[in-house]
Length: 407
Figure 1 (tube, one colour):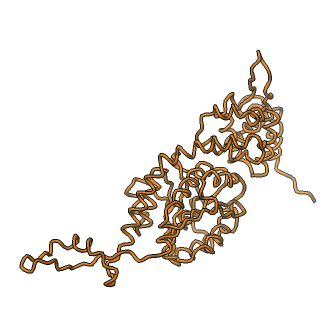
Figure 2: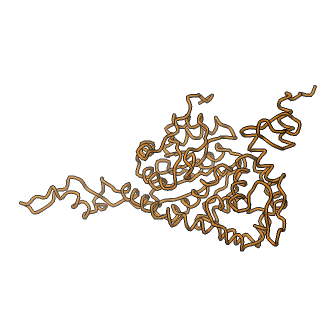
Figure 3: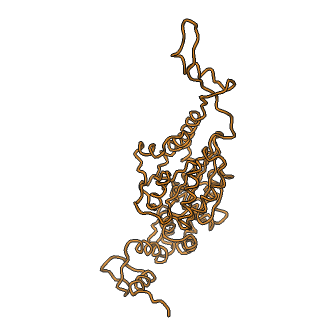
């Protein structure tokens, strides 16, 4: 016997199919059902596309009817909403329909339009998400727009990150138990001047300072980035930071992005624009699979820092994901979960998983781009990252006291 849906659910589905007003008291296409919350967002996003008229000609100028507005920022906001509301495959269909129905092709086919766009993080994410349906003739212009965003971010953020990380590395590589061949006599004398003996005209050192022992790299850094739609701004910032870290010879940097698949973009780090165009925004989330890949990259656990940039909503095996996180933490890897890397403030995240991470000694919090250099300096220097975050006024995600089965 076929299962029948409850009558309220049938009405809801018909209401979403038919569209129409969403406010209480207005006509609801005969269903008597109104939409609220998530359903209202779904309906509004679809109405902006399928209830809107395409670009037309009026007095020789293009104009847009419908809910996307007449400017690129309106399109960017709508595309961002799509990435949050729908699966990746559905987003691709909707974007392709939008290109035809709403005249977005005009935006993609006219490089001079793209050149006049005021570039920002949201627009960079929009162009990244549309790259697979862009005509080849326009991709170069789109890359130029993204490069303007990247160059602006690099000017703002690169030097603070380099300075913070280099200073922390210099401190961490000091060797205070050097062999005779490793003693830095200049620094040793400066450190011990208070022990100068006037009678013998000599310094009696109580503490020796040595040169750091030469290594292939002092620290291994892995940025593991969730490329689901809600993380778009974080992906842009992380791509820029990854490229800056890769330019520092004293650290080895890997950048890994994931949805239900895992892609290692480390070979592209010489150009952050290549990194961003290697990202596929949207889709599901398999954190467990990503952490499994990152485990395979770890060769020196005690010298490895793994930054997981994700809202922690696991679409794969949650217990397996937490088991991998536990293994990484117990092996000596310094693991940090950034719930967001942007300026938006309080992110939405899975509170249960954040609580489980806290129990494993893995701090979870949102981080602004301005705070990221200090975060990396604290992690490299061996500081308590949770205490560092608290000192910056950053709220740690404590999560809800709800036990995850098997953890």
